[in-house]
Length: 435
Image 1 (cartoon, rainbow, N blue to C red):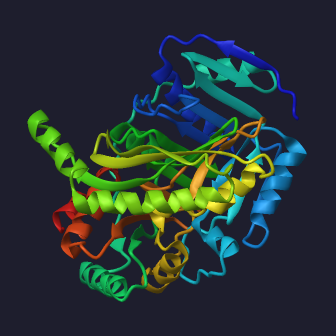
Image 2: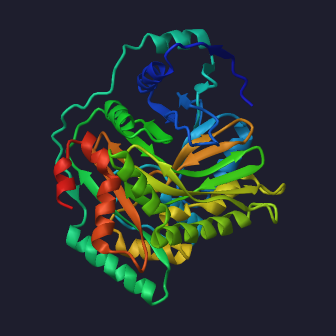
Image 3: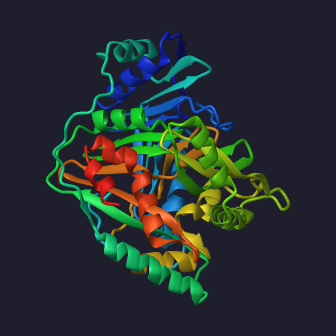
């Protein structure tokens, strides 16, 4: 294990410090900034904010032996690791393929052992690495940069038309009617070419507008993830595995009474609850291979959780990791997450490849950390902007669960509702009006 010097520091204004930390981290060629945004309903979070910067060593691999490589990389270093898993690792987990266009071109799996780790825990700042006092001083000297909304003249295009989207939903429902699947997550891409942005400022604005508990800013040289995710994929704390899939969405209202009515309608919706329960069963099945027999438990079914933009139904499943199973196997067995695939999982992923027009890449993949002790926490990459600075290509994808009872026009409207914060920071409100 890499022995780092560690120091703790008192900070009066932690939110201000987080903004300084974000901009300081952006000066590195490789950085990962994870922000819980003080979300009070997450009973499982370990850190308010966790950041890794600089590269001591890294792992950059393609589909084939990626999960085994991650296991070996961790066992060699037994240190902090930050990184991501792209959706296309499905091709290693199962006999699948991905042939669509990919404008971002990230590695299939990437993790790095950082030079410095900074985290906020119990109202204190901890810095691990060389000269922590100097690092703290450097961070606190970063000029104050409040979230702003610069005007971007971006020409956002849809990969598929609304008409194509609606007809695809109908085709998916025919597959459901024929017994191929019960449910499928169908995604569409919006993109812009020849586009120049400031990724760190855009993330800062997105995170301010939509402060979700699994936000992430990832910089890998000229490629960026700006993530405002509300969803946890999988966490390990000691021997406990926790998964919290989201299925079920409704808008929010500024009127408290109407907002409460929207919550109750969502929580009592047979369609939305059925979607959630199907994914809970799928997650329980995924965890079976890594868990001690008899330890898988649904701790909460269809709980109502409120975020700045939407209400969601979230379920929580816990299991105990079996003694003879390496934690990387638990990630592999559960990947990709059921909330972004469908039921049954393998057939749903095959049909996804038939109907979608863009390689998902990091979208509906996962970003997170692994601690020196082998604990980890990974999100689901949704509500996110991806950007390739050299190619000036910006992309975001939006998806939703399609069932036999889905109404295609409502599914399209739900996609735009999920994209509301992204469209606002990109100054694209006219897209919302087209729904």
